[in-house]
Length: 142
Ligand SMILES: [Ca+2]
Image 1 (cartoon, protein in one colour):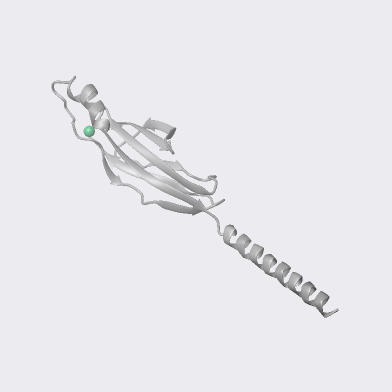
Image 2 (image 1 turned 45 degrees about the vertical axis):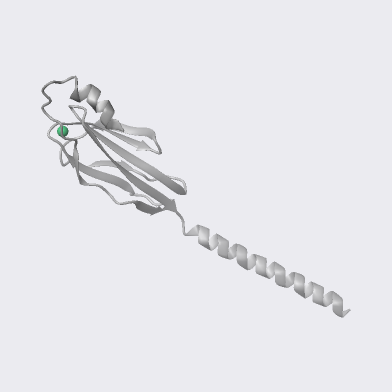
């Protein structure tokens, strides 16, 4: 999709493009799962280009960070403090000639507390059920 944009800005307007190669990811993370409320979670990318320039990070298609990037220097974003759910982080890297590359990472935030809560709810339901049955049997015997 973006290639059409580049044809207009970098390809056709510049008769002698010096750099037509998009940035290359040397390290891109796999999808991440972290516990709700935990800290020290981040996504980190490392990339290379002959002419690195700007990066943009999007969280669910909303831009959350931008800046300059440099060869073999980690580009990272902290993902602490997210609510329980699934998020898509997208990094887009541009070189000075408008070539770009992107990488998406899915972040899932979950909590073990959900399972504990469900179990407690189940136990309470069973106890209520047993109480009702006991009362019912007790009434019938009278
Ligand atoms: Ca390049």
